[in-house]
Image (cartoon, rainbow, N blue to C red; front, side, top):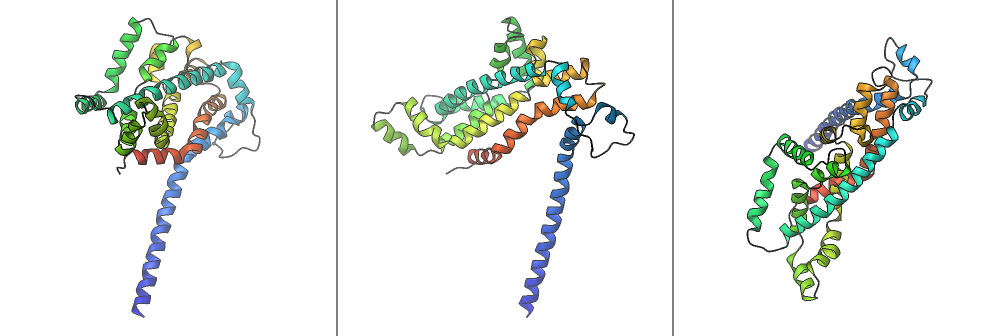
Length: 287
C-alpha cells in the first residue's frame, strides 16, 4: 500500500514538473514568435489604418497586400533579391569545394606537419572578425574589386569552423574503407566523392544551409565594399530603404519588404531543421 502511495506521489510530481516545463516553454515560444507575428500583421495593415491606431491592435479585419506591391515598385527590391541570390549561390558553392578539399586533406592525407598546420589553422578562430574585415577591405580596395561580385564573394569562401566540423566527420570514417579502396586502385579524389561525401551528407547539408543563411544575412562586408545601389544585397537594401526610402514614413510597406526578405530563410530552416540538428550532432560525436 505504501508503495502505491509513493508511486502515485511520484506520478503527481512528474505531471507537475512537465506542466510547469511545458507552460514555460510555451510562454517563451510565444515571446520569441511575437515579433514575427507583429511584423507580418503590420505588413498587411493599410497605411491609413496603421497611422490611425492610437493603441496598436493585435489583429486586423481589413488585410491588404498593397504594401507588398509598394515595396517592389517604390524601390528595386527585386534587384536586391536577385543580387543576394546570385551572391549566395556562388559563395556557397565555392565554399563547399574549398571546405571539402581542406577537410579531406586534414582528415585523410598523411603529410609532414599536418597536425601542427591544423592547430595553427584553428587558431585563426581566435582572431577578431573586425581585424579580418579591415585586412580584407584593404586588399579588395587595392585590387580595385569594390562594387564587384568578386569583391563580395572572395572573402567569404572559407570558414575555419566548417572545415573543422567536416574534418571531424571525415575522421570518423574507418580507415579500413580507405585502405580497401586504395587496394582496388581508387584515387584519393574518387574515394572522397564516392565514399566520404555520401557518408557525411547530413553534415554537408547542414554546412550548406548555415552558409546560405550567413550569406543572406550578410551586412557588414557588403556595406563596406558596395556603395552603388545596383550591387546592394537585401540587408543593405533594407537599410537604404529605411534611411533614404519610404521606411521612415510608411512602416507597413517597410514591414512588407522585411517579410519578403525573411520568408525564404524561414522556409529553408523549417524544411531542413532536422538536417541541421543531425549534422551538428554528428560533428561532435566520435565513434
